[in-house]
Length: 237
Image (cartoon, rainbow, N blue to C red; front, top):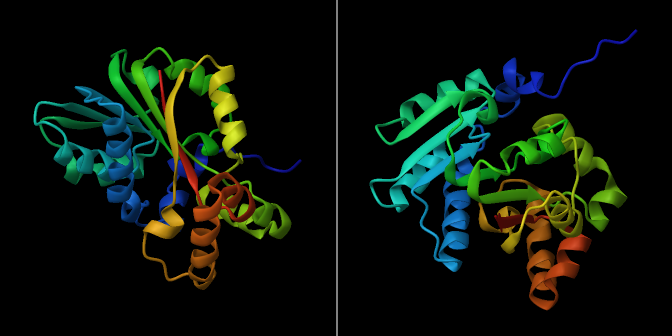
């Protein structure tokens, strides 16, 4: 009988850090800016924030620098290696804990952040049910891995599965419907384009930038469905 492993082992054993030594800190400023943009559109200034799957903690650090000084921020992650990376970013108002937030804290937050997380979880339904009543607002960022070009080529989906641990794949419609079906109230959302906004040395990404920009300027939804390269940032209650 073949040995089986759980999705969590990738993050608990150090394998994820080995494959992603920066733990995506190169995206952290960009992610924080997108979160601030979404909060600003709805004039929301949370006093308490928890990020689930905080990684190296840099997103929370960037948010702290953009919010009033009296905000309380907590980052949680199941990876010991990630929490170790968070150590240099912790301070009096920014704390980090190892483990599942629904098991290590009973605190209610103004805002929970779940940025590029649910695609990694074996049972994201239970996770979403468990955090639903833990905060007034929830912000999700979900990679839209399903597009015409990724389905036809297949290799991008397998690559993201092997390197980044994506075990579920979404498009805009399935991402929104998932949250609605679980009782979340969608307040606002928009596409985010890390493939366009951040520098890249990947030749294929560079080649795809112009067609993605042109297609997006004509029809946003169609561009995302055809060419991919986008994520969806969603504010819920």
